[in-house]
Length: 475
Length: 91
Image (cartoon, rainbow over all chains, first blue to last red; front, side, top):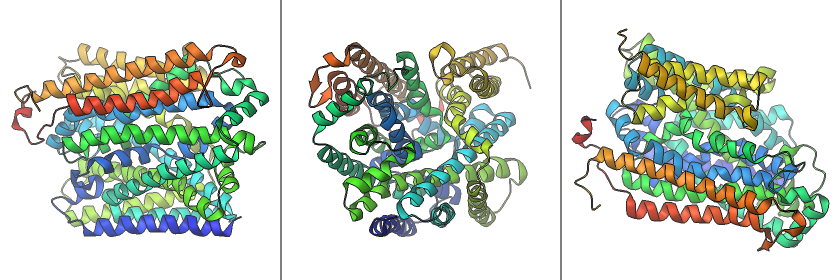
């Protein structure tokens, strides 16, 4: 419980959101409400694009969970985390100019739109909408629980009140602001994250008596903490390397990232985003996880790993500054939630309702419906987060890998391989999705690697095989 | 900039291929330093700026190198394209 820290924390968050709302008001509502609400009118500049990718991706796991694991595992976990730097350049380069141009030509607003135009198949649309709703819904609930817990640990409020505060802020904001407001806030939040992590890291190094002395303390406690193999030597090179697929290359298939890769203004913004994104992800990932490791000698014996970051911030910084710095992880969680909420709502409104239920709905109706659905979804997730069922937690663990295994080939091959067709896409989504769940349940580490590697391989075989063998079938 | 006569599709493909090369290079750099220098006994580690050498080269230097590479490649090898180009219709 810390009053000063709570006040500065909430004022920082309030200021960020106010700026976002004001800025989204001033922009003109141009051609299409849908394009504007869900894509910011395809007009993101380079800095905003880089920041929104980083803030969307850098969620509770990189700010709360990740550093907590690093606290227990040592430098080996930092080694694993810096793999994420590759997302800064790789995702944008691979989707690249061809994707943005194609998406614009198709007038695609969501990833499902893109798949629909590319494969011209009702089944591809329904299957992918279904996987997105299932997986992202559970991912969202987990983020809300994380946000609630963070506010709880700083303010000392009960979990339920903390969750309510968190939910109300997010809901009001995302319902009225839409994509543009969210991406603008993402930029401010991204900036706070960078400055915040730098301040926190520097204070911890000072509190620990310099890097050399921290390393000596770690080595004295357990030499494994400063090796690449983790605290008990169990992080094998092939296991850690397989995260190049899970949190590096595979990120290219996450719908919330894909939608951002079609929202930039021109190739100049795209180029700038590549450079800024790489540097920003690098600084944030390296700093946050080093903070987790360095916290160990200063604050030994933290039992709940998720509380390492709030505790160490309150320990080494003056309370008012701790509040502002902790606004960074809170901001990260909020912006992830914002984007997931928008994405699920756009999947329901755009991909299912407008495609198959009521294609002729009026503009005004679509507008009301988009906002209503966004708000209703938020409320449902809130109800789940109050008393989280086990299934949600379980599903969330599989979200990233499951989405990757399902979508990586339909998206990437859909852009670069002309012969890829709807049979391939359907086969890839089904085999990727189900093989991943089966591996996770019965054989979690095939070949000593994370199971996402094998599922992606199977999904590729299915995509190519079905595309080629069924190409002449008329249906 | 200088290759405007080229087909935009070819340009976009080449740039995606550069992304693949970059990530392969990054992986090799990361892996070679981390497990090449890190497999020694921790008592024999060398330190750079306070960090174990494997960590410094693999993670810290790795991020700096990749940032510089991305900067150079984007500045000198990536081409600006107009997005409303009709030529894209054929592909």
